[in-house]
Image 1 (cartoon, one colour):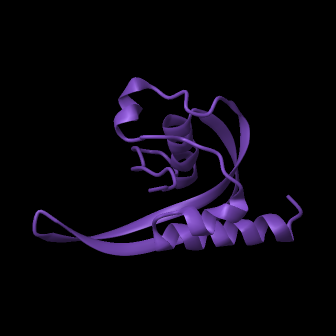
Image 2 (image 1 turned 30 degrees about the vertical axis):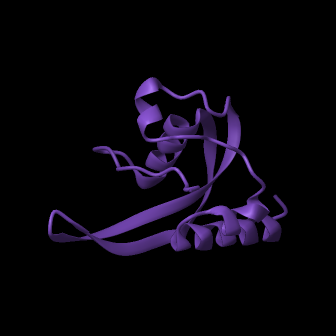
Length: 114
């Protein structure tokens, strides 16, 4: 099951900073922010309580780093890290909202000549 990096916003951290940090922590890659792609909203149940969640997604561009070189404490969250073409993301990602964000990323990249 393939999913995009994501995590909880730390105190006094902006959402886009969280995106860059989480990508580094979960992939070993340092990246820079390109643009916000959008938000995915969903509801789930935890310990009998309904939880309303909003996840913001950002398009980032690789700067440096080695894919998969992550801290040992992150290895419990991440089973495998892999590059694959952006064109493949909409069909490979497990979650509908993430597939939609991949489509937005692909459209942005194509329309901006990136």
